[in-house]
Structures are given as C-alpha cells and as structure tokens.
Image 1 (cartoon, rainbow, N blue to C red):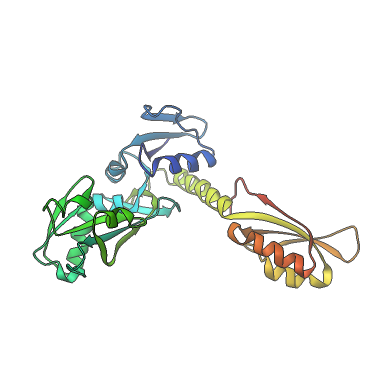
Image 2: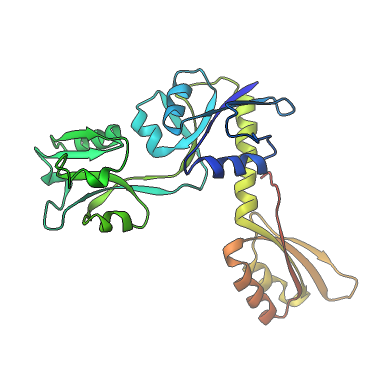
Length: 282
C-alpha cells in the first residue's frame, strides 16, 4: 500500500485535498482524522503538519508527500521534488525599513528574522555573506520594529502586509515556491504505484488547463482552422454527412478558449462547442 503524506492545515491543505479527490482518491470528512485508508486504490494517507512532511518522507517512513517547495528546502531533509502541482504559489523575499540596505551583499553583520532559516542561511552562503539568522515561527514583519532584526525574509504574495508594517521589499527573490510532490532522494520504494499516482495528478492538471473544443468547418478552410486549434498532438478531423464539411475536435487551453472560438467563427466555423475535461491520461 502506498503511504502518502498530505498537509493537514494551512494554504496547502484544501487545494491538495481537492486535487486528490479529482484524481479519484478518498479524502477525510473529519479534520480530526489523522490517517485514512483508501482500500480501493491501495493508498494510505497521513495528515501531517506541512513543515513535517519532508522529514517523514526523507526518513523513508512514508513513500511520497505533498508539501511546499519552500518547506522542502528549509527542512534540509533527504527528500526531493518530483512534480509541480500548480497551486499555493508564493515568493520568499527580503524586506526592511525604507532607506536601509538594498541588496543581500550589504547584509554582512546584520540579523535577519525569518520562518525559513534553512533557506535563508543557504542563500546567504551562496552570496558569501556572514549574517545572523533568527528563526521565528510567524509574524516576522514585527521583528524589525521590536529590534530583533534589521532585515526580515518572508513569504510575499501582494506585499500589502509588509507595506502596512512600514517595510519595503528589497533585492531579488530568494525562492519561488509552489506545492510539489516529494519522495526520498534515490528512493525506488513502490515505484510502480508512485508512477500511477503521478499520472493521476498529471491528469487532473491537464483537465484543469484544457477544454475540449468541437466545431464544423468547410473542407477548404480546415488547414487554417487546425492552425488555430493544433491540440496536444493533432486534432481529430471527421467528415460530416453534408459534403464539403468536416468536424474537428481538439484540446484548447482554457484561457484561450473564448478568443479561439471568436477566431474560428470569423473564419467560417459553426457549431463551436467547448466541454470540460474531467480526467485525462496523456
């Protein structure tokens, strides 16, 4: 049975549960449930703190897990990223009071407060900067005001929280993160089941990113139409009962669907339909 670590709370939890549900796996109904066995799919889910998942996976106690790239790297666990999941995007950035230091190369001798001490220490080492890293579990934006540090490193989405604290973002991003699937470095445990699990998640990502588009087009215009809807490999083209007309079916990115429909209509296509994709295997 494949043993999988899943975030039990935070910004990773609900999107991860939704993706697993779309992939056909059972999910817990009670948040207090710590272990769930999906007998039909031969999977056992363990609901853990997101920060602990890389430790459990890296130790070999669990086969794979879903966590954030930032949490994986910060843990220094013997685990590696094997798939991006496309949600919980964030950026780790430095910030300080306006008029202060402006670049990581100016941090020598300063104190830097962060919840990601491992990532920040590694970033400083990459730039040959000797500074003191102060580990805090949360609310690091108050560290400068309280005199704990001169600089902070925090997860940034819009930057509003930092601006409200009277801070400004400085330097290049330390790390760009998102939800990822991880496994133990060099681990080949349950490899066949792991590949099946990844295929299911990849199918969910494809289903979310594409719609199926069907339309009718005159035969002499099909090449121009297919140029607008090339699909992943090649569209399906079938003759219609009315001579001179063809039916085309192709996968189109969701964000392009309305524009492509307009362009097909202007070209002469008719009966243009889009339908959602619930599952996929490529």
